[in-house]
Amino acid sequence: MSRSKIISGDKIAAVLERAMDFGGGILRLTPTWVPRNFLHPGKRIKLAPTDWYALGTHRGGIDERWFGSTTEAANDGRAEDEGLSYVVFEGERFLLRDAVEIGQGRVVGQKIWDKYKRWPVYSKFFDNAGPIPHHMHQRQEDAALTGQEGKPEAYYFPPQLNAAENHFDYTFFGLEPGTTKDQIRQCLRDWDKGDNGILDLSKAYRLKRGSGWMVPAGVLHAPGSLCTYEPQWGSDVFGMFQSLVEGREVPWSLLVKDVPVEKHQDIDFIVEQLDWERNVDPYFKESNYLEPIVDPSVSGEGVTDRWITYGEIDGFQPVSAKELTLMPGAKCVLQDPGASCWISVQGSGRIGSLELQTPVMIHFGEETADEFFITAEAAANGVVVENTGYEPLVSLRYFGPEVHTNIPRQGDYKKQ
Image 1 (cartoon, helix red, strand yellow):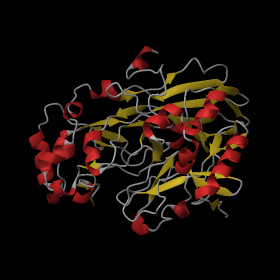
Image 2 (tube, one colour):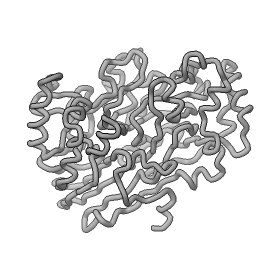
Image 3 (cartoon, rainbow, N blue to C red):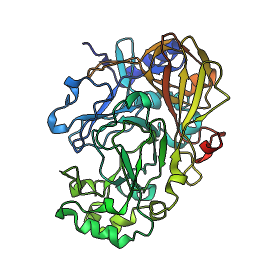
């Protein structure tokens, strides 16, 4: 198996220009695999069984694939490019991050480039055999204390990747109404006594294929074992608040990974990172649960485009996503208002001038034809998508912040 040659520096601009010309502004990306040494792979993201531990057992099993990422994975012992997506063209590849810096507004859109000077979001599949520890992602003001950014995120559970539920298809969100901060402080004091009991203060929700959730920063959540598509802000900050999961120890260091060093033992400070009102919201599901909503402006005979991540957090649209389904022989033109990253979950066809194929199994290092970055330039010109196969062509694509002016709000699925 041969891999494309990595190029960098001054060589990138010319190759990027040729790739943009050839693909009509659509860039083909290679798979980006990320291990987590505190979790067990769910084995549903199509990575070959021989490669679950391709980076070594000391790094942990590979349970995540990141899409359109210019964000580094915050893992101990990480490779230099871990978490970063590559563009591939004619036997050469280069970081999407470098393509964004060179192409700027052509690639991510002028408004996003002017404000963020990067592609500030990404998405992933995370796929685990069991639950993830109850944790939160810091809000902006807390993440900034360690020179990072806060991370709101969203979930969607693609049916194509969830034939098996694995061990625990329930997610705990937030805290039971009436929970006090003193109770959470006591959970942290009990860290080394075994199970610190924080799930006794939370509520689990059964996960449903083809549905999703919005998860604001500062909200505790213990994701269950459905394979999850996760559009999110471009940050890898988190703090684990649960000391024991399925008999596995969660070290204190994962609670304070993104806390200023002088605050590592400051329980009051650690608890104050939580968005308390959202955590104890008695209507948490009403505020954050999502079901797909058909976008009639794109849908038609043989074509269905559905919102799967939508709504705002504190009046801000951090990220959004859609699911496009084309029946065999169907064709459509996408003319989205901004750049997006595409991943196919079923079927085959063409996107612009590029062939696409959803793989059944991927070996570590293989360069697939299922992931593409649709640049702002391509989106503005319109992208022709065609299903040339014998089964539905289904894809997920996520967008950057504040791209859509006409987007559903949380709860709007009830109006369908």
